[in-house]
Structures are given as structure tokens and as C-alpha cells.
Length: 309
Length: 281
Image (cartoon, rainbow over all chains, first blue to last red; front, side, top):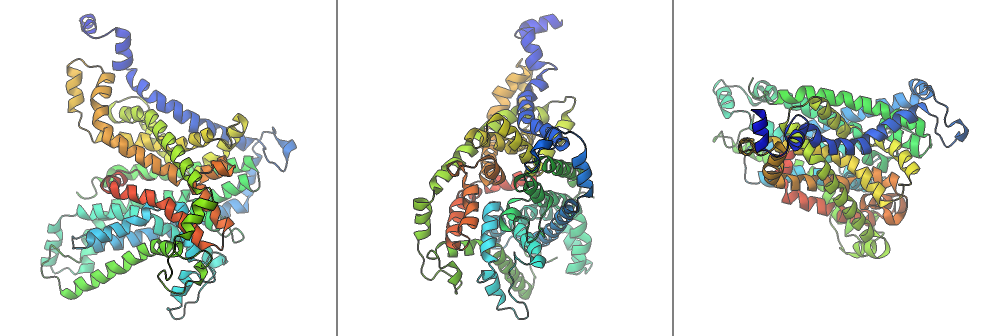
């Protein structure tokens, strides 16, 4: 029976390759080879480097394998500080972006005559490349005659700052630039989430004389909670990855006050020229983002049921 | 909740307050872009002396300087070249994988998905250090080919992930019909699914192009000769080189950002749904 079936198709060898159990693997093979070449191989090299001692300052030590880089990592105050700055940066950008995006989405959820225009305004910052974001905010933060300081002249009791030079203001200043660049992603999600909430719920609430805050607290927020969870993880990933804005604006300074894990990795490799230690820091970053991705995948399927409840 | 359409009796006061809030928030979002334009139109060297909030003596001299005295045109050409190659190659290698992940059941599919997502979401600084060492050994540092390879590592995961999402959205009926008529699985992919997916693949190509266009880190580290820089690296160098000449920085930023903004407006609907399906740049 099967032989008859095969006779009607092309040859059986082709059938096995393009129709049988081998077909999925033929389909993923090109991508696997490419991924292996451009990502797998570098990752293996990173692992090898992290056990080696490739550093320009100690050329003779190259080829000495051991766990010394990992021991150094565990004892390195700069690494802990970098993790702390990354965490602060993530927390700051998540709070800022969610706050800004949720406000914008709640304001523009209903169709009003210029809401299309307003939506474009809230999406536009997302199209701006990170490099350009950095340059624009660098100009606006200028300590002497930057437009932010000039605008603050109109506000009583708040003085102008040298935003990117002062230790206390540098990290918040970077967070503001990042929030401006990335909050539209959260805005898109919130707008879609709000659209999925049935109007009847609000009508019922109004008949029950629930005020605007109660409606938000008991209808809007519960319906949005899975979307908020997904967005928080996405924004954490984006904040954790962030490099051009921080690197171009402060390079990790002043005196290391904005040296997040990504910037520390870069500086270890291309400023201190300690490639082995930089690879070790890079592996730490990969592990951290793998944890974020697992959290993201846990939550993702549940968003579909978020509005059913 | 404040309601407009659904509540016909919304007081005028609330509508007014809401309008003011929207306008204020939109101004916050748009001001940095507006300011980029103002400074870019200010005569060279006078950016720090602007005392108004609009350009008083608008001029295009910064744009002329940019293209006449700096290799801006060359950098943009490099960006176009690298982005086109990286995105096209990534698409060619990623599409079949996206299809397999969407349609076929096979061992390790979930693991592959997680791996692809992780590579898309891990910091690029983690990959750049070993890549730099490998390229140094292979003689690929400071070459165009090297930069294309580097950008492929950014775009391939994206192409796989997004083409999976796109095939998920195409109904399987036509492929099933083709299979019943005796078409092989591969035939169903090439003759039925792929032609249907062309608009989506075009969109993924553009998304990959923009991702490569945005990249700063790879261009900064893998290439040292100025004539091989991409535009992102070129304009970023202006902050170091012309720290005080804000006007040139802003003119270059404008030139660099405008193509992306235009693409966004052309593809607005698609980009929004793409972002919702879980793909981020």
C-alpha cells in the first residue's frame, strides 16, 4: 500500500527529505547554521575567554586557564555596583515608562477628534534611534545654556544643574532619556489592552454609582494586570540591554556613577583591554537576561486570558 | 474612568481638562524632536546662545557642512549597504525556520524558541567581546563583511521570531489542500505559504533594516577606519568631536532619524501590530 502511494509521489528519497520526519530539520538547518556561526560560536568563545587570561596589560599570562576570572567577579565591588546601577536603571525606566504610557493610554483611549494626532505624538519618540536620543538629550541637558536649565528658570525653587556631570543627577537624567525613547512600546500595549475591556462593565459601574477612581481600581486595573506584567518584563529587558544612551552621554561616569553591567562589560574590554574579564561579565549578563526571558515566556500565554477572567 | 463616546453627558469641564492633559503630555513627547529641529537650523556655533524657543535666523548651513566637510554621505551609504545585506541574508536564513516553528511539530522546538528569544534579548555587549576576538583572529576586523556578519547576529533571531509570528497568522487551509492534492510539505511551503507571506516578509525585511540602521555598538567596535563607519557611529562621534557645536550634532541626528520616521509612517499599522505580537527592536 505504501509503495503504491510512493510511486505516485516523486522518488522516496526526496519524499523523506521534503515530506517526512526529516523535513522540519531541513527547514531549520539554514537558520541553525547561521545562528551557530554568528551567535553560538561567539558564545563558546566567550566561555573559553572567561577561563583564559587574555588582557593587554598581562600578555604573558595568556593561555593560563582557570576560574580566576570568576573568582575576581565574585569579589569585584565594581561588578556589584554595576548590577546595582543596572537594577536602578531598570526600576527607574519601568516606573517612568509604565506611568507615562498608562497616563497617555487612559487619556487617548476614546476616539476624540485629534486623538489620531495625539497617538502619533506618543508613538513618534519610539522611531528615534537610540544614538539620536542620546545626542538630543545631551544637547538639552547642557549645563550652561541647555534648554532644560532655561525652562527650569521659569520654575521657582528648582535650580539648573550640570545634569550629566553631577553624581546625583546623572543616572536619573539617563533614565528620563530612556523613558522618552521607550515608553511608546508600553503605550501600544496599554492602548490595545484598554480596547479589550467591554464598555458594559463601565456602564454597569456607573449605574452602581462607582466614581472614576473606583472604576479604574476595580475594572481597568484588574483587566490590565497581565499586560502590565508582560510590559514590565519587556521594559526590564530593554533597560538591562540599554547601551548607546548611557555610553554616549556619560560613558559610565561621572566616576563610575552610571556604569551599568553593559557599560562595564564594554569598558572592561575596550578601555581596560581585559578581554577575559569582559567575557566573564558578558556571560553574567546573558544568564541574567535568560532569567528575564523565562519570566516573559511564563507570562506571555496568560495575556490572552487576561481579559476573560 | 473618564468616558467620551460612551457617556454622552460627560461634563464640558472634564473634556477640557482631559484635552489640556493630552496636549501637555504630547508636548513633552514632541519637545525633544522640536528642539533638535530648532538647533539644527541655528547658525553654526550659536546653538548655546539661543535665547528664544524658536529659530530666529533659520539656516541650512549645518546640513551643507555635514555633507561637504564630513563623510556623512559615505556613512549613510555604508549604513544602507550593511543594513540591506544583513537584513536580506537574515531573512533568507530565518524564514524557513520561522515556518518550521509555526507549522511543524518536532523535538526541541520549544528549546529553539527560547534560545532564539534569549539571543534576541541578551545585551549586545555580551556578544561583542568574543566576536571582536574571533574577528581579530580571522582578519575580519575593520571590514564591511565583518560588520555585515555582526549585524546578522542582531537580525537573524528577529527574522526567525517574527516570521514565525507571521506564519502563525496565515490560515493553514490552503497548505492542507495542496497536501491533499499530493504536494510535498516542501512544495506546500514554497508554492503556497511563501507567496502568501510576501507582504509579511517585506515588513520583516524593513524591520531588520531599521534594527541594523539603529545599531551603534557593532559599528563602533568592529570597524576603526572612518570611511567604513556606519551613520550611527559617525553621528555619535560628533558628540566627542564637536561637543560645543550642537548645531552639527542636531543636523546630523535629523538626517539620520528622518528615514526611520518616514518608514514608521508608511508602515504604522503593521509596526504597531508587530510590537503587540511580542517582537521588540
